[in-house]
Amino acid sequence: MAQSSLMASSSSSLPRTWKYRVFTSFHGSDVRKSFLSHLRKQFSCNGISMFDDQGIERGESIAPALTEAIRQSRISIVILSKNYAASGWCLNELVEIFKCKEELGQL
Image (cartoon, rainbow, N blue to C red):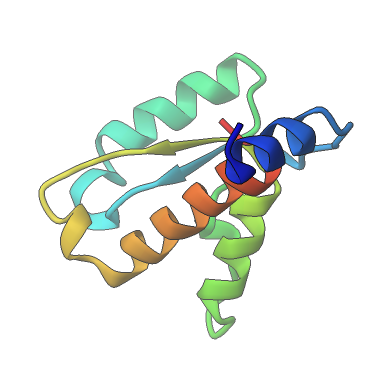
């Protein structure tokens, strides 16, 4: 078994409390007021907690808050859209999501 597989399987068996059920990675202007708002509404109606970046105060550095939200979420959903891959923020989130999948056993 590869080292990363061992790490993922041993990490995922540890009990962990997640702050959020879902973290969504998306390009804001592409989906925030359309697809994402519908997804957020359905999750909320079904009692599924989802990180909301609107809660980050203006002037606060967004990168540490997003990294922490990814690490505190059980599941990450990447919403691919026209401008997703052109966004440095989105690609940084994606890297963190993959790290958390390997290190923490996130879905």
